[in-house]
Length: 271
Image (tube, rainbow, N blue to C red; front, top):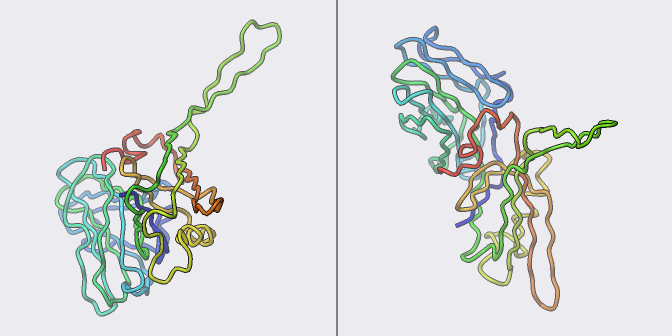
């Protein structure tokens, strides 16, 4: 099934690590951001993790889904994520695990709690753990069966310029790496259930996503083949001759350069 997130409760995209503090056995590690991901570097044997200083203070009944993406330097060091609630109880979101390629996951938070802190660990061995993001949201919208009725994926179109030089036969080709990927969808709103519990019209979730784009930098899209961060660039409802369709254009979102990832990681082809 094709899915898209909506309704951010809290997003940590790690363009900054201001407001995060090392815990556990301090001195056995360090952490820093490259402007896109936070890297925990474990140098000692102690329990090393970081968490957010200020309480998140959101209801897990309203925002029950948590997503993340991580990568470890080798298979010895482990990533681990723990949620801490206002009553001091905890939930292990991601048990100790390693992956040398970018790996995404999600789960449901314990119901009827207030989420205050998220602990990001580097466990078991020396090395590094990179966390790309942690997102707490309302849900993942699942497209109805057999929808979209059509979908195209245009991955990283190459970006070239042809420079004209006087008296030269043939231009100079100059490469500028790649553009952002795009996904175009056409969905038939007359096929399947397109309403959430409180929606008024079919496909209302997409209006919700577009309306909140000022405060929600991106959504996580799973096309069943690719998974990556996207923004909704075009949203058109077509109501012609009694038929109801919606056209969607999703565009890849990047905070940092894709050069730090393989194309498999960039588009989540392994997820």
